[in-house]
Image (cartoon, rainbow, N blue to C red; front, side, top):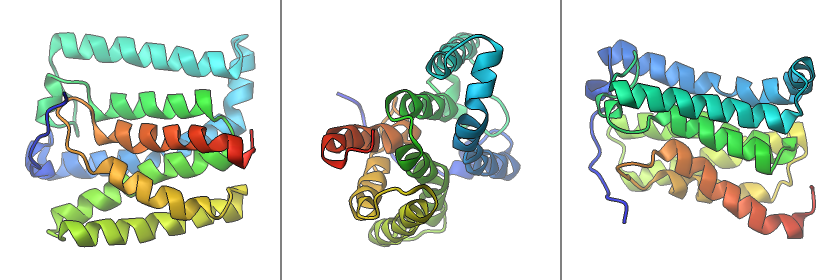
Length: 207
């Protein structure tokens, strides 16, 4: 059974202190560019190396796993990572794996954009609310409202069914809540909603 851990101060735990923490948050927010790159440039990039798009995604995941294995073997962290990540799979690696799984399993804009944007923007939003001392109940309420708006924006931009906002905003928020020792919330916040999307897809019928 996965062991739960206590919340720690993210600034104190970050390599580089407050500057490392800010870098980590900015990097997290910039991940919104990943689905844009996938949908706008992915086919062209795959064609250049004679891969299918899914093969390119799989190759990137494999390279990331190898890189993370080497990092763990050497036991080091980089600027912005947390000190404890020297001995366990990093949030970056978990997030990369989860995003890759979204592209492999639901590679359409209607699903990929809101799922990945929920991680990209929702996770830092919740983290900063906690860092400011907001009570858990308020964090949940504010975050659900924030993600409902985000999913409705995706309804407007990418034709995501609007009613999914009211199902998946709470799922994404509660998927981020568990504090597990070896599985980062970057993984749970994507993989749990991804599983829910796949279960509901026969009833939605977009793919």
